[in-house]
Image (cartoon, rainbow, N blue to C red; front, side, top):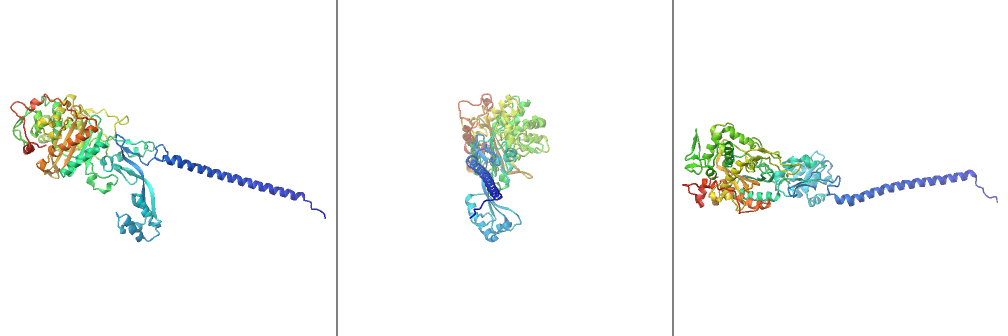
Length: 583
């Protein structure tokens, strides 16, 4: 049998097929290797992200993982405002699968802030998306998810959180649902907090949360005790202008500002203007000393009878019935004497001093929400006199605090600030208001009014060792068409320690009501003075002011004028003391 012999052309074809198969296999191997390489790179990237980036999500240096808005802290680094990831609950009405009424009823049970009818309307709205709840708890999200409606949208998104809740609420303000500041320092710092290059570094405010909390508690206690309609208070560094505490009552929770009324959102320290009464008297005296109208503390003025100017009569609540020198005028808070001094000053010098102190404009501070003082429309002789003791002109409490700081710090005006002083926020040069000599005299007079031995109207604010100085002020509450003779605005403007001034402290109660222990009185001496003393006793040590009874303001040249021959120092207690105190 003859054997078969392979043809050469068949051999060639077989070899070509083998080469083609080998090439196909090679190409498949290359593609597979490339695919495995890509998968490997992705896996390694995911591993890197999960280990390194995921674990450092809270680290500012992790690019792209910074919070949407920078943090705000107090002067000691305590967090005041931060951004967190919070759950939100929404619905895509056009994608609704289940019965709208059934879903609405379930939503109303879980989120009772709206009725089933309200939720039904939301579900039937011709919108692509509707928010049902922002900042929801994980438990609520799980319950809503259990409804089983595919159109419900559950997601995490950045939310602004104020961990101290109501503390310093009017300073901080709040943000809108899009995370932009609309009030307070959130509004002022909006661009800075949203700047990607800076938002990893928190902004330090001048506020001290410890001092803020103490002032809020003491002012709130006074407001509640005397059932006042509102209150304001602040503590400010007299040399730097830093506001260490700022309180406005009633207050609100910036985590939910819409839950309170508009009155609670108003910052009474910067937005409310009041006639602050006798707290203006030290300003008038400082002006008179600086202008040469008063050249001696022993200069006396006639207070034997009420002062009649045209159809107006200026009187003292506690008539002295005699001539008074300057120290007596201060501790007795004489309207008559102050009016006579203001009359000698005249309008030009009176308004010039007010301009130097910033009373012609809204208080200088970063906040946008602030009010301009209200000046008289007509400056007649009577107006000049009454404005001298704080009636007929209305300013914000912050305006007055800035003025007091200038009067006691050596005579230099500095604007207020809510940003901690640093190289980026240095103390401005300021401008001189009064001389250092006049400032020293003002410090004497303010301390004299609080010293218990002087029987001044501010003596109930005294705390041994803190060398407190200040002035009370009580004015009838202004209203449309005149004044409410049954309601007062009661204020205490204080400074401590008076021998080396460091801080101005102020409190104002709007419309307080008397109690049995004040003998029904609502003057600042009774309703604000004690609260000031209690606040200073708490915050002084926090600010490094340690009680020291070994030294005080030197009053040796003023006390003989206060207790000059022929005039005996009063010794009053109980109801008699109540009748004695007016401011």
